[in-house]
Length: 336
Image (tube, rainbow, N blue to C red; front, side):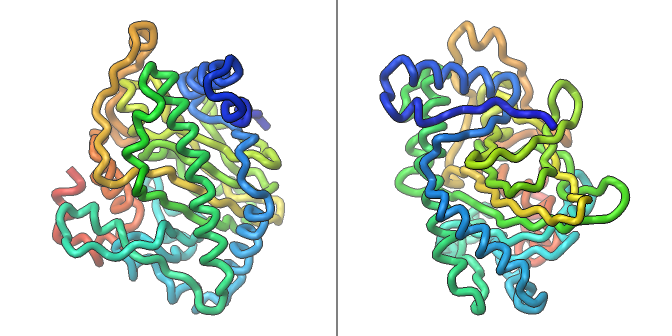
């Protein structure tokens, strides 16, 4: 097992202009430059809310298959709903997990262009589990302050005003979340989710006690021990691209558990509004000299600067069923 750096965000919040805040910002920048992953503690999210989310998630994955499959993600152009085992793909292979995707409650767009606007829409919730929606949506909103504080610290660490990124999230955002269940498997190593790096800005992962997450450190995939009370945070490819590779979107994967225990996690993708554009950011000279220009993703394709365009490209690749149902008219255009 390998431990990640631990960042206590409460030291930033106690006095945002003090020396402790400055140390937090410098440490955060260093961690995201070298590792791209960290445990975040002191986040202030109610532990009872987190436990209720896990309870509701376990209840959802225990529902009869027909009740879950009625919420099939293929029903939704916004990629909201249930994905059965093996129906999502990463790195060209099937992921052995099933999940429920959701976001803020939104109306479907009145226009289909640009195509990424279709990523907004209503969620799908199980009628037989009325407690899930309020808990999941409360948790989604509870993460907003955490993500904003990290983004403001990143801005300051890059020599930008603290509120540089605020307009991408306020008053509207397009946060997206997944409740994920990895069934235990027997025998050989098995792909829970394949090696990838995230496409957006930041990801926060709430894990249970069962390990499985592996992060590429010093060229090796190393297992990360879950830390009670912490979120695993990692950087996405759009911030790597916007900082000319100074900040790092680190490849990672999840292996299916093999000790008879299933694994449960909740992943929060801290997404800005889909219209947000992330062009190259100006870097101070001392940071620019340490940049590692990397404007492509793991498949060697260009990273779009408009968040919605990049997000849609990745989703269409992961969910070919949704792509065929809702995006057949733009597939060639979006995949370029």
